[in-house]
Image 1: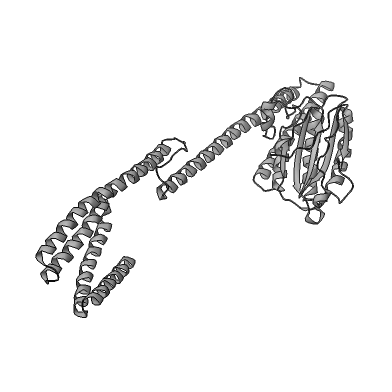
Image 2: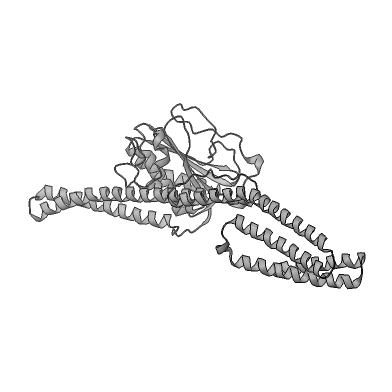
Length: 433
């Protein structure tokens, strides 16, 4: 309101100045008084209309009222000018008729301009109403390139974000249901066995060697339950970002070699050969140093190696490699088993995922190894993924490299050979999309 008054006062002063130059000072002062009176009256009427928008109604009615106020101000100014003999009565009549006719034309022009605007506003209104009813289409478009078009674009973006959030919540709810079902299944089997074994021991049905065997089986079930509960607790903490990380510069190549050596006996027990390649395909250079918690990364490696061993047939091979990629240290575990079906690859890092015969989850494990590995890697600011391979399974993860150990671009290989497993053709290490 203050800005409108200031602009009007300046306009009145300019008009009076023109009259002073063309006529005389007394006429200019009288003109200034007339213009100020009419302008302030018109502004007061406009302010009152602004306060009464709800009663006035649609935009077309509001614009028509604005034109009417402007024309009324013109007619008032002409009437006063005629009364004080600025202009003759015939001139006043002519100006008044012209003002009224132009006002009618102005209302028509205002309606022509407002109809598309009102149509666009109704489109946005109807789409928002449809969103409330569950519709999530994002093809809202207006007929112009003005603020209403920007409003439509913002509406589409809001609908898309809302759809993504709903899809995320639905996926989380579905994952929660599947997790509950899987946990219930994995708890029910050992608990049922424990109940039967306990009753047999209590009722003295099992005696001697049978009782000893039953007690040993009970111990196995209790250990399995304990491992499941521990893994569930660790997964919950990891997904909540509550993993206590003792981050420090870690020689990933050395950690990889030590972990492979620790798992070599487990592999030999199943007839699987393990091998470590701390600098796969790369010439000697700066050490592969990442900022990480060594114990947590060791756990990731143990999970990946254990999973690979479980799904590699006798006389098979598991190779663990490490290499540098720009500002990342990448680690991969490759086996020459039967691999993972294409339709199951996107689910292998989900807790308790059960796929086909050679799914990532083993019947002897808790089914949480890969899910915990992903949570730990994500907590380090890294990524974990399944890389394509001609045979078997190839799991990769990356960690941020320590700045002072990042190689110059000339140190980085243009192509790195894939670990050679049972005649597999070498291929470049693909970057993750």
